[in-house]
Length: 166
Image (cartoon, rainbow, N blue to C red):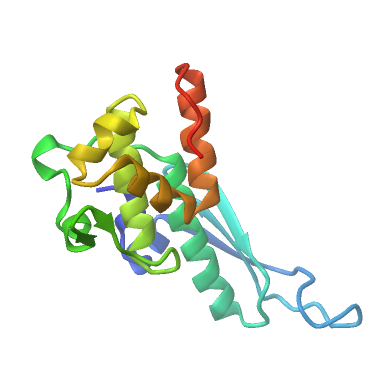
């Protein structure tokens, strides 16, 4: 299972959580309080932080979501061909359209799955799309919901001499 697919409580068990001080909303004379959260995913050593809210709990939620998205983009796992596409992916298909809001809690897991399958096809979108029962244009539209994902896809494709996706 890809770490981006884990429920937040399970993901946090794999993370070091550091509470720290940062400046944030409230203007220049705001007292600094310990509401910033820094998460380090121990298996991958990826780190994210959130300090944009005044509430530590809200910053923890934001950091956890940010971690799931970062893991989805950076960490690759092998998928068994008989599990492609996953039940979650199939539940989001409407014909060949992948219907999910980029802010939805399912998005990081779906993003991880699409990038894992793409990596297994050596970043060839025209081979990946049929495996995920969608089209190349739908995949590109799906990745555009997370700009760092499309940057990662284009970087990997450039390393292999493949064209840039717009």
